[in-house]
Amino acid sequence: MVRLLFIGAHPDDETFLAAGTLAKYAAAGVHVAIVCATRGERGATGDLCSIEELPRVREAEVREAGRVLGACEVEVLPFVDQLLASAPADDIRRRIVQIIRRIRPETVITFDPEGGNQHPDHIAISRFGADGISAAADGRWYPEAGKPHVVGRLLWQSPLHVFDLGRMPDLQGQPGLDFLIDIEPFRDRKEAALRAHRTQWPGLHKIFFEKGKPEETMRWEAFRVAYGPRPANPPADDLFKHEVTSVSTIS
Image 1 (cartoon, helix red, strand yellow):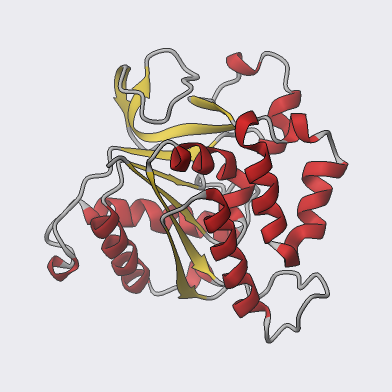
Image 2 (cartoon, helix red, strand yellow):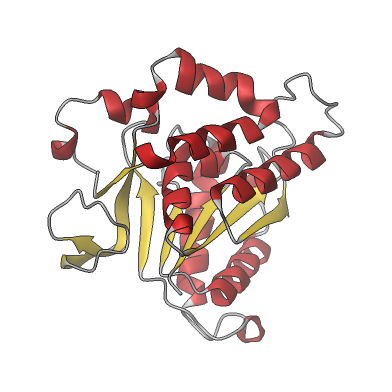
C-alpha cells in the first residue's frame, strides 16, 4: 500500500495546507496518516470551551478532521504549543523516527524552513521533521524503534498561500510549485474538515470564505520538493508520479 504522512505543529495545520490532497489520496486507497506535534493549547477557544479544556477539545477536533478526510490514523504528540522549538531534540526525534518506521511512508509533507508564515512552531516542526526523516533511515538511531526506512520524497507547502492559488495568474509558471493538486472534487471534504476545527472556525472562515470565493480559495493545493525526485515537467498533478528529471536535496 502507498503511504502518505503529514507532519504538522498544530491541530488544523493538516486541514489548512493539505486537506484536499489528503482526502484525494485517502479516497484512492493511499494509507494517509497525520502527526500533530502539539494539542494547540494556546490557540483560540472560539468561546466554545475554557482555556483548560482547549487541549482536549482541539485534539478531538484534529481527530475528527482526520476522520472526515479519510486518514487511517492521527497521532498527537505531547509537546507544548508555542514552545515547540524548545522541545527536547532527542525526545521528538525518537517519536518521529518511531512513527516513520512504523508507517513507512513514501512521501512526507510538512512546513518549509520559514514555516509558511514564520510561526516559530511551524519552523520548528520543519526542522524536527527533516531530522526525524534523516534519523529514520539510519539504523544506528534508536534500533529498538524498528527497521530503518528511507522516505522517498519530502514536500514543503508551496511559497504561495494556499488560499491565493486559485486567484493567481499563470499559476503553472510560478516557481516553487512542483506539485499542483486539483482539489475541486474534494472541496466539500476540505470545508467539512475546516468546520471540524470548531474552536478555530472563526479565523478559518475569514480566510477561506470571507476573503474570497470557496471555488478560488479551495481550488488548489501545491507543494514544493524539499528532498527526493522532482517531476519532469512541474507542476505535476500526482504526488506519487515517478517520471523525474533529477533528485533534489534540502537546501
